[in-house]
Image (cartoon, rainbow, N blue to C red; front, side, top):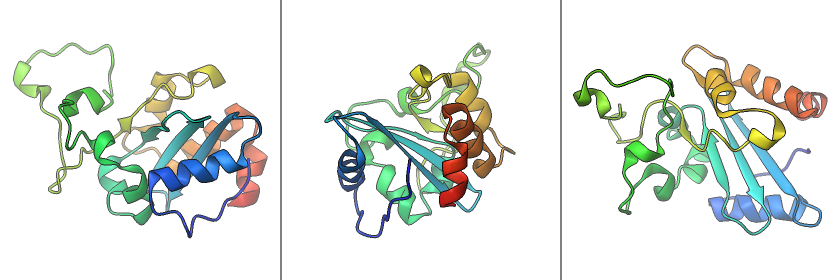
Length: 164
């Protein structure tokens, strides 16, 4: 884990290429992005595969230049036949819908879903399950604390603090 300069990164493809350059032998690279304790994102790059992304608060991220990089049309369900409900991470995976009208996804005025979005299972093989990642992302959680908790669980907490 190291700090990387993101000044020349304009797209998710640029970010993925930068992560791949930092990798040895196509190993997995995790990119942590944190915006002023408002939201965080984890981008996972595995070799030449498409990046996997988890964003703690898509609506807040959409107001940031870094958020614009990771909130792709594909992730937001725009320009495809994908149903946005399939992309939005459910806060309570075990809850049953009592009212079918509540299936609609809450969105900000600009059409970006409020709350977590993306692949909450991207850290499972590192020992952080989807439920744990979601618990770190719920309203009231501090994004910086969540990233610290993730980095500590991955054994690189000291490195994260060094690059902050």
